[in-house]
Image 1 (cartoon, rainbow, N blue to C red):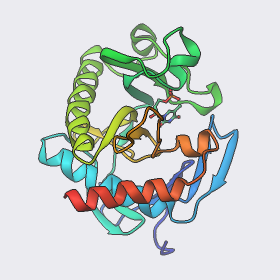
Image 2: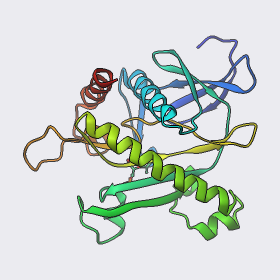
Image 3: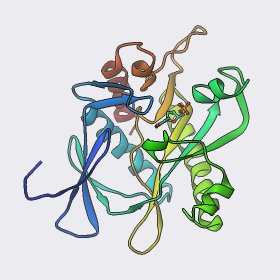
Image 4: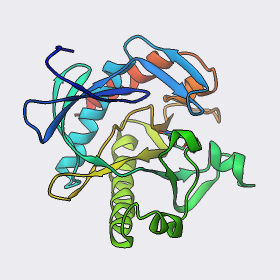
Length: 242
Ligand code: TMP
C-alpha cells in the first residue's frame, strides 16, 4: 500500500487505511487466516485477493437488492474502497443448518435443518473471546438501542434470504454466516466487514453422496486442506453466474 495512506486499523484478516476523502477508507484483504480466536494461524497466498473479489461481487448483489452496505468499489484485486463507519462491536451469526459452535454448546445434532433461521449475537471483543451475548446485556452496555438492534436483525434475515437464493443458484448451500454492521457519518446502519468463505459456511451441492464438502474456512479450521482451491471454486462459480 502507498505510504501516503495512514494505517487506521489492522485486524486478523484485513488492514484499513485512510482515504483522501475523510468519509471513505481503503480496505486491504490479507492472506492471513486465523481460527479459534487466533489460536491457530496460517498464511494462504492468494486468499486476500479471492476474499476481496468474492466480497465485492456479493456486496454489489446485495446493493441491487436494496441492502445498505459500506462497499463502494474495488480499487484492485485485494483492495476495496468503502464508506468509513463506526463499527458496532457485535458479530451477528445467522444459522440455517446446525454446525460448528452451536453443536458444541448445545445438544443439537450437526446438520439439523433449523425450522427457522437462528440468530446468535456475539460481543466483538478478542480479549473476552467474543462471548455469546443477550439482548439485555447489549442494552445494559449501551452498544445500541433496542430499535437499532431490531433493524440489524431484520437486515440479517433479509440478507439471509437473498444470499441463500444467490448461493443455491451456484450450487452452494449457505449453512451459516457472520455479519458486522456499522454507522456511517449520517448515522445510517450499513452492512460492513466482508462476506466471503472466511465468514460463511458453504457446502457444495454438486456433491452427490451424503458427505459434506466444505468450500469455506472449515478447510483450515478442521485441517481439511485445499483452502485456496475451494475459495477459487467459489470465485469461479460467482463469476460464471454474474
Ligand atoms: P461458529 O459455528 O464457529 O459459531 O461459526 C458460525 C459462523 O460464523 C461460521 O460461518 C463462521 C463464522 N464466524 C466468523 O466469521 N468469525 C468468527 O470469529 C466465528 C467464531 C465464526
